[in-house]
Length: 221
Image 1: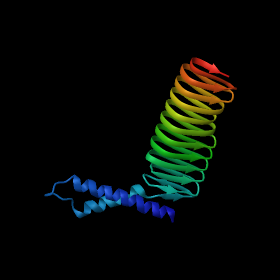
Image 2: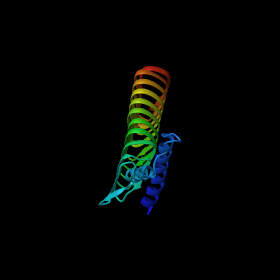
Image 3: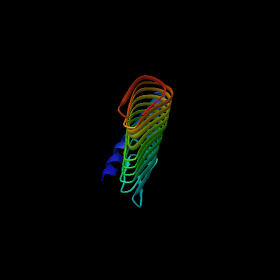
Image 4: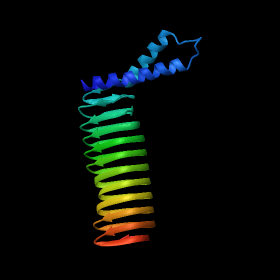
C-alpha cells in the first residue's frame, strides 16, 4: 500500500513537470497535441514505477520501501530492512537496516545499521551502526559507531569510536578513541586516546587528559 502511495505522489510530480515543460517549450500558435501529454504521463509512470522482485524493489527514478532492499538510478525516498542504493539523489532520504549508499548527489538523511556512504557530493545527516563515510565532498553531520570518515573534503561534525578526515577541513571531531586529520585544518578535536593533525593546523586538541591550542604538525595522546 505504501508503495502505491509513493508511486502516485511521484508520478503526479513527474507528470506535472512533463506537462509544464511541454507547455513552456512551445509557442501559443503551436500547442502540443493531446497525445504528447499522454506520452509524457506514460514516461513519468515508467520512471516512477517500483518493480518488486522477490522482496527487492527496483525503480528508475521512483521512491519505494521494500521487504529486503531498494535499488534505483535516482530517488528521493528509500526505506528497507536490508540495503538502500541510489546512483543519484537530490535531498534524498535513506533508512536501511544494513547498508545505505548514494553514489553522487545531495543527501539529506542517511541512517543504517551497518554503513552509510555518500560517495560524491553533500550529505546532511549520516548515522551508521558501523561506518559513516564520504569519498569527496561535504559532510555536515557524521556519526559512525565504528568510524566516521571523509577522504577529501569538508566535515563539520564527526563522531564515533574513530574519526578521520584524510585531506580537507574539519570542524569538530568527537571520538571515543582516535581523532585524525591527516592533511588539512582542524578547528576542534576531542578523543580519549589520540588527537592528531599530521600536516596542517589544529586550533584546539583534547586527548588523554591533555589539552593543546594552536598545534601545527601535532599529535596529542
